[in-house]
Image (cartoon, rainbow, N blue to C red; front, side):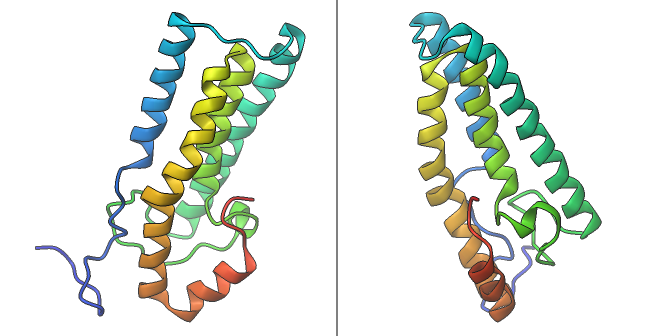
Length: 160
């Protein structure tokens, strides 16, 4: 039986898709597109210097966010109930540091591999995540936590 909250809705965000699926699809599409029709956009020296930095930064943000959520006893999967709002660590700067890290990973791989395809996919990922995941999570959190989430939302930006 599905757990129901006070508003009568299922106790999860009801996202349109799970974010790791978007990440995997973007990475597969980026590498396949790069192989079929390479589109460079940076000097080689720039891509080899900055790409790894962006990729490593994306992993750092991801790990920081996940560890902060574990310490806060918050669930990470979008199909599970959320019992708390995490406001520490990277969540002081972004309401969605895990999604930010995903977009940075796609962007960083685009820089590192010098492929415009990844840049395009990173740009497309932002509205997809906003529409299919973030806006639904925000409605769920507002419904579940009310003023507590609204206050957090007013203090911290969605992305950065």
